[in-house]
Each structure stands twice: as structure tokens, then as C-alpha cells.
Length: 253
Image (cartoon, rainbow, N blue to C red; front, side):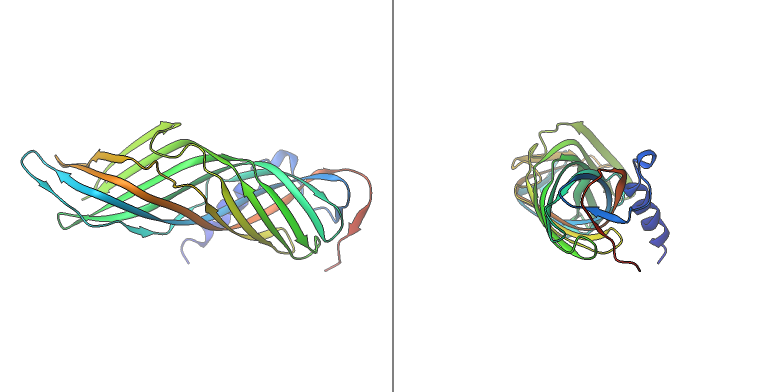
């Protein structure tokens, strides 16, 4: 319950990041006319990290450590999307857009009896393309694809009260290009529930090596698999500028 105010504020901020050009939802949905929507979301991401050839190196010894345990990662910032919609009728339409999101995962390891937490994320620039089917005034379903560019990578390592981090533009640690597929259920009022799956591994399939903060130890392992997916809660708000033309009136509430 203590996180609810933070979730609410994050959702409102993300959905209204272009607040100067957004006003409350208009009362018509255009048909056979282009119109714009802005969206933001709260992301709950997870994945599967499989590694091999794992070792901990000190000045005098080499040892191994536990397999990673994935935990859910919450991210409320920074997620925004500008979408260009077109409806063929009140039942069928599509949109294309441009989006920026903060995606990644968290894994826990056991090293010498202590827990190491590893956070890895990247900002992604995407171009979503989706088909819309249903009642555009109430509930409808989206099915889409989104090629994404992972352009800003960050890794944080936590161990025994110490922390280290690495930030890199267009890093070799992640797959730079990663297409995704998503399904989305839209509710009346602009809220939606989305599920997304990335088709490529999140991390580059290579060796990772880094120092454990506060210790004279290095961790080294081979990344064999690193799937990434998420579920998100979001909101969309129409831009004030809607082309004149045929429109379907919103049902009164």
C-alpha cells in the first residue's frame, strides 16, 4: 500500500509528459481520419538469465557461485509514447508511433554466503505498429510489433552494503536491436493492460566480468540466455487536435 502514491504519480507523469499539447479526452473518436494519442505506463518486468562457466576470482583462489534468481523489476520512469491512430470503423483500426521506455531485469546471486543483487536495464527507442479490434469507444484489443533500439545501458551491482555501477551508450553488453511483440487490452477511459515479449536475448551472448563492490573479487560468467518480458499498466490521452470529419459519438456515462 505504501507504494500506491508513487505508482499513481508516476503513471500520471508518464502519461502527461507532453502536457503542453494534451487536454482531457475528447468526446468523439474519429473514423477515417488520423489523430494523435500520448501514452505512459508502469512496467513490471522479468526474465530468465541462464549462465555457465561461472567463477569468482580473488588474489589467491577461484570459486563458483549460485545460479541467478530472477525477481520482478518495477519501473515508473521514463516511459512515453506518441501514437498516430487511424480507424477504418468503430470496430477496426491501427496505429504507428514512436516510444521511449526503460526496460530490464534484476537477478540475485549467492556469493560466499552473501547475496549479490544485479540490476541491468537499458532505455529503448521503439516504433510500435499495432492492429486495433473491438469497440473504440469502450473496450478493444491491440496486437502489435515494435522494433526497439537499446541505446542507454546501465548495470548496478549491490553486495554487502556496497554498490558499483556502469553506464554506457550503445553498449556491447546488450543486443542493440531487439524486436518485440505485444498484446494489449484497452479499457474505457484510456487505461490499458499490456503484455510484451522481446524476441532476442536482452544481453549479448558473451562473457560478463565485473568487480564485486567493496571486495577484492571479480565475477565472471558466460551469458547463455537472457529472455525479457513485461506486463504494464498504462493510460492514453488524446491530443487536442483532432481532424474534422466522420466521427462516432462517445456513449454518455
